[in-house]
Image (cartoon, rainbow, N blue to C red):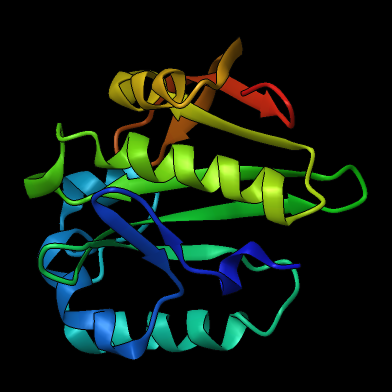
Length: 183
């Protein structure tokens, strides 16, 4: 069963597959923000048209069995405030690498932790995946706190394994993981 096809409800959030109607909220809240996208390791989408092109690809990708991507929707106003996704899925070894981002105006409210915790629980209940893993770059230590609060365990650091093309600098990758039954 694919987790991306299911809706996950938490106390304050609804996690659901993206729709084309999410473009304005994405553009306003996070995908047009250079700092958010840089921390997330993704390009900036500066026009609604470019966001719609991306969304079109994502919506089509929900037909694939290894595509997992949720819009993070704040229940209070039905606006897309971020996303959480599996950037890599390895069904041979039953593991996935997870990534997430939250718009600047919504940070420091526990939304990323709430979404990550819910996706971890949902994944281990509704899929055959046994392990989830993630990393954060050294200059985005806040992401590590999110992983810790979601009960992921620190597993090690790969020194200077991330290269910033724009600055020519290197950064560390700090790895976390969680296995089914750990929470």
